[in-house]
Length: 189
Image (tube, rainbow, N blue to C red):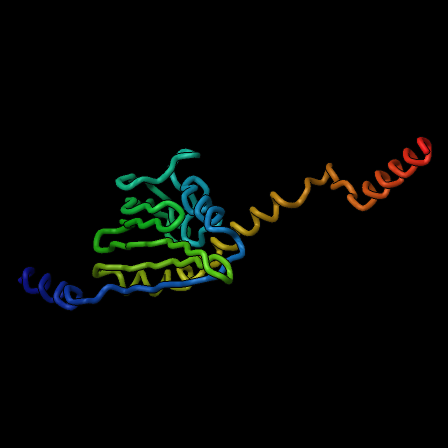
């Protein structure tokens, strides 16, 4: 009798197609800046789905790396397996959160005439995927834009001077230099 129920429960889920979504955004940040943000696995403060990871600062992702992260939505630890890395172009990982669920995530960066195109693709497989996809879809739609905004914020912070220092006024400096050169010419002549 129990085998009947097991077959009945698993039958509709065996033929489910994977659930997938791909989200794109244009960024003013360069491919290098976005890539540095993606491969910094220790800092996921920008990520709408992850709180933290157990990766030490400075570790560069390579295929075969397995690390753990904690989800913002569910207080569970998930395992992440790095599948493919193409520097400054692509990072692909598999996420194993629960039995009956597997997620493949791909980050892709491309330089275009209008800026840098950031793509985030998520594909869920398994019998839990319809339930989990209905919960994470709004958050997954924000990952690419949050990544772009975080990289742009980092650029703005590095370009703006710190509060204690001020940029020299170049116009005033040029006036003083020209006056000094003029005085020097007048004294010699």
